[in-house]
Length: 330
Image 1 (cartoon, one colour):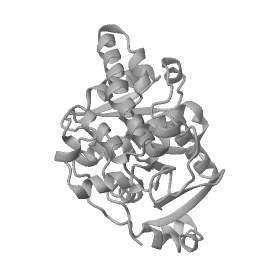
Image 2 (cartoon, one colour):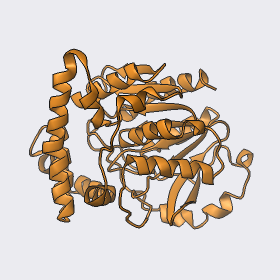
Image 3 (cartoon, one colour):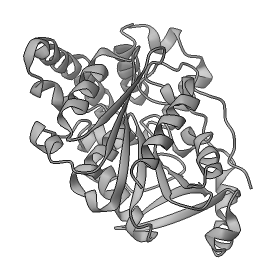
Image 4 (cartoon, one colour):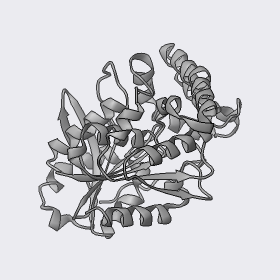
């Protein structure tokens, strides 16, 4: 059984992944239970699909491959678990048990809408996922909003983690905590993000204008008011909207960027690697520098020619850095 290999994102600079939906996954889930009866040693090198009932009526679909120390990959917004379709087999080949799952409201999940949804809820879901599958202590690699999920997991559930890789988490509240020469710039960016991205997105999603809500985000991060209509094909836009249900829930009765403070970050006691693209969005570069400086013992790596999508454009280097980091924190 193989994970459906979709194409890469149409544009690699967006803050979130644009990955085709896995249209044939539902067929494979029907036989996933039979496959998962096999012991891990019998399944190394073979992709398996599963469904974890994590409680409170919530289920998370996932794919896994390999055997060995466990690494969980967490995707960003406008995406799903197949964002990691190249990394799961690559890490399995390096003797890891690699799992990629879809967050609560991303395909192919069909979970009921619940009030208060945010990255904190995603972190609680991930903790429940780890407990439900009896995974023990794990490595976690998060990208974008998935990295924000992993950041909250490190703060709230350090006992579940061996080490964490954070690839540009949009920890927007930290912009208000920046000190020194960059303070004014960081605070101006925070105000601008709230006024020209978050508030328009909330207005549009609450009015059930999902396409306009996604457009508000895309146009903002590209700094181009025509980006949604001119930089993406109709097929690309349809794919993004197919992955936008999480924002429909989050923007109507949840929080896109939940509270986070310097004190929260300073209490992290698990090994952290902060991964950045030198050509990424300015506010993400500021946040990454803040995290690398304020998380005790944090390590950092920056890819000079990468934007936000370093796991696509610099995949081999990102994987090598992650494997070396994991090896140093067994």
